[in-house]
View (cartoon, rainbow, N blue to C red):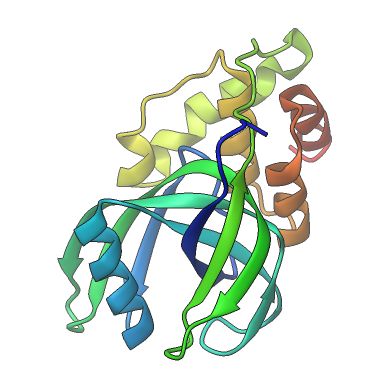
Length: 191
């Protein structure tokens, strides 16, 4: 932990894992989340994205304890009239307690997890960095504009975990790991 005091943030349960520095497009249609977005933008703060363990995005859901703070970087009206968001993953957190507001919005008291130390990519995982160099520009605008940090084991591990078609529980494990080399070892066996 970073020693930062716990914070209270709105939680957005999703059937996906957001990693630090990851791109997250969202389509907002529920009133509680429209209100959450308005509040986040007014207060220049983010919201927590957590993977659903059991339940559904539009109903009650049990989530994992570790998630990622999402910051809204852009918003627009979608062709269907709904609110579209472009978000960016930030710090990881662990939920220490939670409550539900009357409107159904989940609020979590979270402790911030320490940022992983910058480490080089070991030679045995150089193929993963090369894979990203080749594949990311082909995956759409969010990745083509993303500055590549192919010499950073943390960044490479997070991007590989995002794009590999592995079970969500495995992606969650990759988010929860504090050791970037251990993450690359796990993913290297799958890539």
